[in-house]
Amino acid sequence: MDDDNSLLHFLETPSKHYSKTCDGFGSQNDGGDHSDSSADTDPSNARERLEHLLNQPANKFCADCGTPDPKWAALPFGAFICIKCSGTHRSLGVHISKVISVNLDEWTDDEVNCLANSGGNATVNTRYEAFLPENYKKSRVDFATEERATFIRKKYELQQFVTDPQFACPLRKPGSNKHHNQQHSSSKHGTFRNSWRKKDHDHKGVKKMMEIGMVEFVGLIKVDIIRGINLAVRDVMSSDPYVMIILGHQSMKTRVIKNTLNPIWNERLMLSIPHPVPPLKVQVFDKDTFSADDRMGEADVDIQPLISAAREYQSSMNTESAQICTFLASENSILVKDSVIAIVDGKVEQEIALRLQDVEHGELEIKLECVPLSQ
Figure 1 (cartoon, rainbow, N blue to C red):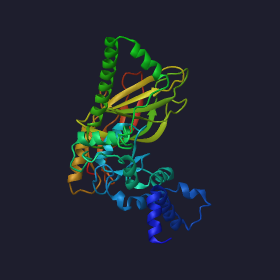
Figure 2: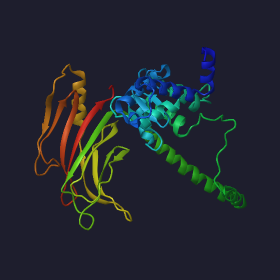
Figure 3: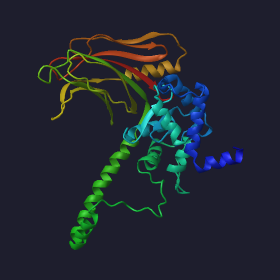
Figure 4: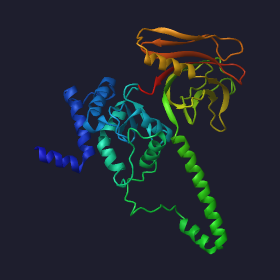
């Protein structure tokens, strides 16, 4: 196929062209033999394909604000974004936008395929900014957190730029005509009152969503949930425990481990760190099928010292492993044993053995790692 036909094919089906380019790269690296299914799950293969996608011209700049060298991706949209925009994407919730780090996370073949099939930043913006008004200010590198959050929510969550506003109309649910007729048969005063109440309720919901999106983030915290020890019984003889972590408006939880009081998770969760920095809430629950989950203890962890240590390490020239500070355990504290903030292999980490509060007994071992915003 000559260059002109290749360009025409790209313009007609950009996502297919982009996906084929990525698949071709994979074929070159594995000799074109796809009979072995293990290649699809090979982490090194996924990493090579990811780097190839990241090196595409349009993917070298954040899809939302244009910041060079983006190191995050938003799925299922398939967009490469910068760390500032990733904070707003995280606040949308994983049901809308799942944020993954190019360097910090382990990528699966399915996740790389999602990026390949999306067509890259150029195609993502062609779709989600198709009808961006000429006088509308798209997010830029120097935008404030509030302006950045407003644009990203309109672009992805509300999808206001996907269709031409001239032809857009609100969707009606089944039975809405019946409700509409009932409103017209009522008095003018009653109709006005009901309409006002609905608008006020909607306004409060939108305002709350915007407040969450306007939070400024100063970095990321990776939380490794390692294991529980001697947890409380909440079923007949045992429990089905899982862990939930909460930081500001964000929350994540581990998988449920059935029928044990000494579960081993070895599971990593990651949250954005908002400013001002709240304590990290760690809660343990027993999963129930027919009733509300039972509490199995909790603890609040002050992560400010870890953040301060990470910032100091970032600005220093030290590259060797070292202990930065130690927090001593006592009978009245949540620490089962002394906790140390240390530099390990270029990472600022803190291992903590928590004594769970508001419960008969139980301990939880976790490890924290702080990644400052500039990383």
